[in-house]
Length: 270
Image 1 (tube, rainbow, N blue to C red):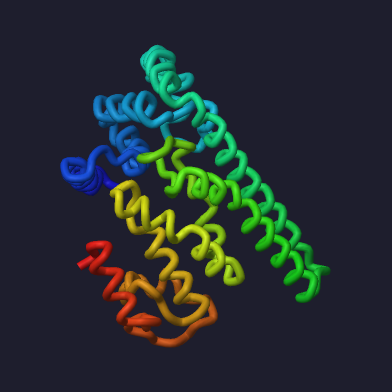
Image 2: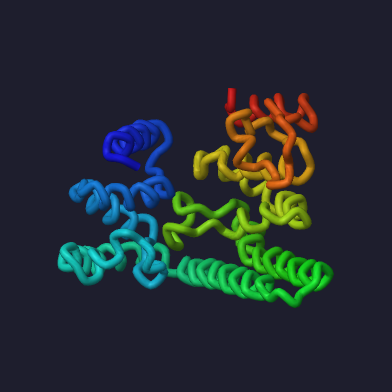
């Protein structure tokens, strides 16, 4: 993201916040670009808010953040350490119990990444035949679906889908396991069946964007040839088309036009 585009995105997020309140997930993503473009006053301001109000925690950082070294050992470390010790304690006073679920979510994603990496290595073994590779992929599907039960248990207990805005920051690259399961044909429908009610509730409260709905539509199109909500436009088709699909689609069919229109009215997508 070049600086001109960064400033446009920054302005758009600030305008969005005037209507919907602080957008923790978007600001968490924006941190990378604020640091890269040396917008350091804004970077510090936002990181301070994320620590104090949304539970940004050093222990859950991945080490992949562009600002990781700067805030822990580099030019921003003196400021960050003093700020973090003060602001993180303020967050803990009101959100102490959230640490347990934060850790569960973090561990869940580590497990997802470890298992996926292991399966990728196994599939590189040239002596495996197609039946064996299919069996390995089937086991991966089951593990990833089983693993997302951590988030489902949270949803059942709290009656909403967790985001940085309504729960707490886990880490900047956290996806709650949804995207991984959407990428698997056998998992997409059963995953959506579990989480759609909670995603809908959080979306209608302006606590998350519509990306989950769009991604569900995209992978439903990829595997079944249609979409449910009508969110995949013609320019998105290459993002979700199967590698082996050589058809020249100019639009993605909607499974039920009446349902899609009703959903768009309900969610304000028109």
